[in-house]
Structure formats: structure tokens, C-alpha cells
Length: 332
Image 1 (tube, rainbow, N blue to C red):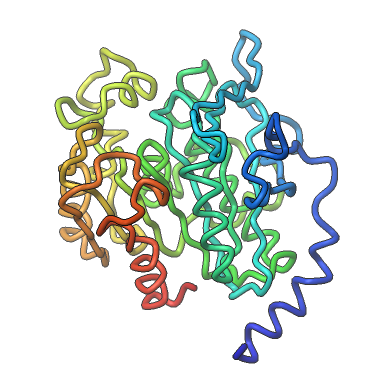
Image 2: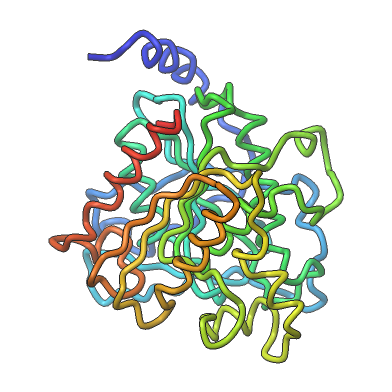
């Protein structure tokens, strides 16, 4: 039975659903709309930068969508060449007042929008969350902000979500960040460096805080120092010959402060792509700073399990664990 708060939020959000921001860059569309017809495709987006993303590379970039799935019933799209970073919105039928910014993974080579974006977007929105999947710029594509380019998009995204909280029936103090693999690094970077100056303000929204109220880096890239670092993510973020100082500057564990929000960590101990020690080192730094942290380590699951590859395994429970944990921090 709906409580009064949910009923009020639904009443606020429903008439605003038709007033979505106009002339935004659409999400990629399926080449065959009949494929996996039971899964709704999102159609609402928010462009992050009204006058274009800052620091455009000298060479022309073209947004490209690669379909990697060999199963005709399941999409697995990877996007690169993103020049119009944006949020793709999943609205719940009855908003619970909480939102989550989701950064899909992709090794900083691309943004994997289905298995680490849209799938968790559908799952959480079915449970009342308003979900914003982030199409972020990639640091290896020549942007002026270099290794801070994805963080700049995440900061701007968090500020825009707060700025439009009324439009979506969101409480501005109940906004989470979540990220997977390299997107987990984006999430953790936002949680630890939310107040770092990465771009010049473009409007009044940039006066708002970019700090998430809670953060969930899932099997996250954390360290930029070998051998712990994921080599591909490290190469694209800071380069193959980065100095120890640059490695530390972009390793999450060295940027934790008392202002870092509570964190929820998930990892499989048999992850052979991003070693579990990434999450363990980040957890140790959070504990040392007295930041609340909940950690779930699964014996098996490998890397990149998201929702689909965790089915019928112990790791399948992680989204439920996240939702329950978030409630203990007043979110959800």
C-alpha cells in the first residue's frame, strides 16, 4: 500500500513527465525494433552541456554504436566517440523520491549501455528509483580535460539531477551514484573528488553540489598502479608511461576524505580482469577515513556480471543488498 509520501511524489511527477526537456540528443536506437520487444527502450534524455561539451578534440569524433551480442534476444551495445554526453532517463511509475546516476563500464574504451546501464535502470525504476544512465566522454579520445573528462561529465550530471529534482519527484538529498568496472572508477572518482575543479561553470546549476549522497562502485577499477591496475583502463586514462604521482592522483584510495559519502562495494574474488584487491584497497582507505562502507565479496562471478551474468548465482542478490543498504542511509 502506498504511503502518503509516495502518493505525493507520484502526484508531483506525473504531470511533469510530459514536460521533459526538449531537443535533447536521443539515445541509440535498435536496428531491429522487434528484437527483445519485451524490454522497453528509453526515449528521454538530458544533454549535459547546453553549449556543447568543453575541450573538443582537434580530430572529428563520430558517435558509434557497436552491437556485440550474438543472442538475437539480448542487446549488448557499446558506444564510443561520444561528443554529446547526456543522461538517459528511466522514470518509475511511482517515484520513491530517490535517484541514482549510473556510469556503465567499458574499460574507458567505450560505454557499455545495456548490461551495465539500461538493465539496472529498468530494475531500479521498477522499484521506485529514478535512474539516469550516463553517456560520458572517454579520456583516450583527445578531450582537453584529459583524465578528468569523465569526472567532469559525472559532476555536471549530478548537478543537473539536483537542479531538476522537482521535475522528477526527487528529494535532492537522496541521490546515489553507481558504476561498473571503469564506470566504477567514474563513480568512485565522483565520490572522492566531487569538489575538484574540472570545468568552468556554464550556468547556475554549477553552484549545486556534485557530491552523491551514497556511492556504489561495483567490481570497480580503483588503482592506476600496476600490477593492481586494469591495464587497458590505465592506458586510456593516464597513459602507459604515467608517473607514480599521476597514478596516485587517479587512484581512488588516495583521494578518500572524511567527506566521501558512504560506499557499497561488490566484487567477485575470481575476477581475472579487475582484481578484487582493487575493492579491498578502496575499502581500507574508507575505513581509515571512518567513512561507512559495506562490502560484499562473492567467491565466483568473474568480471562484468552486472545483472544478466549473475543470474542463478550467489552474486544475483547484489542489487537487493544495495537497495536494502541504501535504505539504512535514508536513500530509496
